[in-house]
Length: 178
Image (cartoon, rainbow, N blue to C red; front, side, top):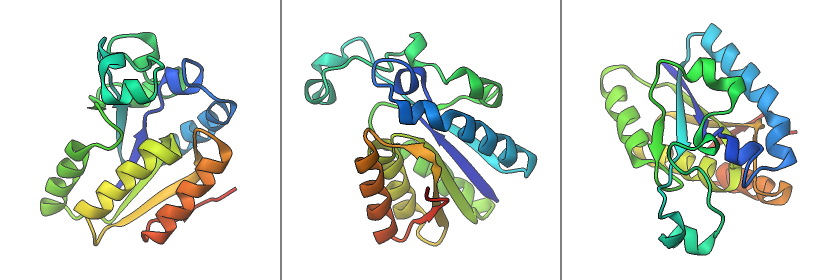
């Protein structure tokens, strides 16, 4: 079984509070990659950065005082170009960068149906993508964990490149580097 994880492709990270041109640029590539994965029968999972109204009172909110991805807001929603693929599936809402719930879920699936490869795409390479890739590597050490670099963007181009290098050092396959 192959799994495609679409990390935090939400309005606030593309066109909202923390949006960047690099994030806007990857949306068509991510949509094409998701369509291709669906055609090939990959299991597709979405994560969603999820904060509550008290975000600014949290540790993360004090370090990054930009309210974003507040549950129930338009900024929290998956970008329109991907909503049809996310429809019918509950995204994995995560209150922090990496999701242990996602890693535990895939580890449990792997007990019954071997997960051969997990590919991650999305935002931000240097925060949530790397956090989830490393968690998955820890929970599923014999599974091929990959990141499609052409379908990821970091907070900055430099931090994107640094995160890709760090993942390579941790034996995560980096595909399609631009």
